[in-house]
Image (cartoon, rainbow, N blue to C red; front, side):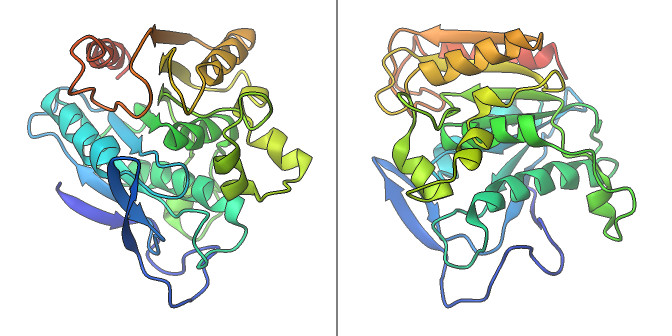
Length: 285
């Protein structure tokens, strides 16, 4: 890792002061962090970059833990090995008592991360028109939300970072959550983000298969048919929504592999997703 960049230099929006502290936490067999107080991007610049593009990695963890190792650092180092600059998003989680308007905060942080990469593009030798967002599981939900609900930036903003667009140019979604509607909703994750009795309009807004537009970025989807936590129908629905809007989309489905496989280090067959992904990225950035 080269450096850590705070998303905000001064006042962090939707934040209140509490005695809450960031903690190490576990989900299943994976370790991550929770109760994140200061959102950041961790910068991994390739020693020998083969592209001026960049990949913003959004780890999963069900919106209660952020798996910044196996779905963050390890992914960034793998991309570096192939000559791609990578950034790991450390965004705030809706289970924190240090934030307000909880459903807005992860997306707010993700938008800011894209803006920061564009703002530092010259410094990092990055083409600001070649930015991929790559999300895993809940991170796939956040990435797909970003794909659907980006904005063009505020040209009149006093903060120069806010002048930049938050639109990803391309997107990779790996076993993503997309829908918050029955019968394939990840109910626990939906309740963490939206509350146990969420407003119907919010459920629609964050069911990303329902809010795709023709402005969505080209997307690669990866999923396993036997995923026990996030049914493959999440990817299928998003794929069909993109096709309906005539957005270029590619999908790779594998018969077995479950959920949370990340680099699939213990599954030689499933590791093919990485080769397919690198091939796809090479043709985009």
